[in-house]
Length: 103
Image 1: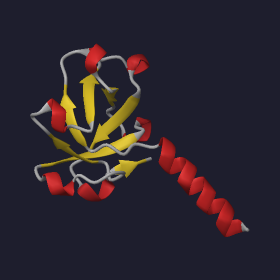
Image 2 (image 1 turned 135 degrees about the vertical axis):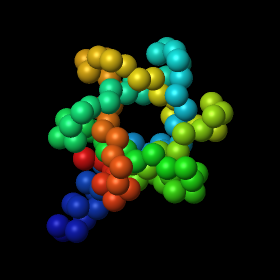
Image 3 (image 1 turned 90 degrees about the vertical axis):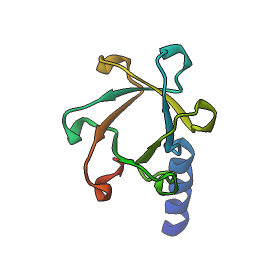
Image 4 (image 1 turned 45 degrees about the vertical axis):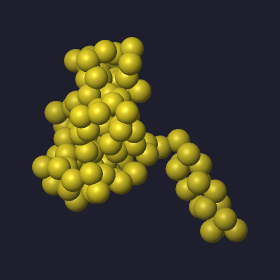
């Protein structure tokens, strides 16, 4: 019974969490899928992000982002805001791949 309950929770959590890792930076807020605020502290972030140079490392739910130059290739189009209150997602950029992921 406990196993079934945990499985259902994991499936529900998976349906509402982030699964995009190939990102494109847009200059227009209206065109963005997510509005991002970059935090100075890990404790404030919803997601800890590591930038990679390899598209193959950018996997769903990993927090490892590959920046694409083509809008059509991206899973997410993002817009960076200076205001925390506008953000749909708060991120912290890390230098360590092992820290990447959802909080």
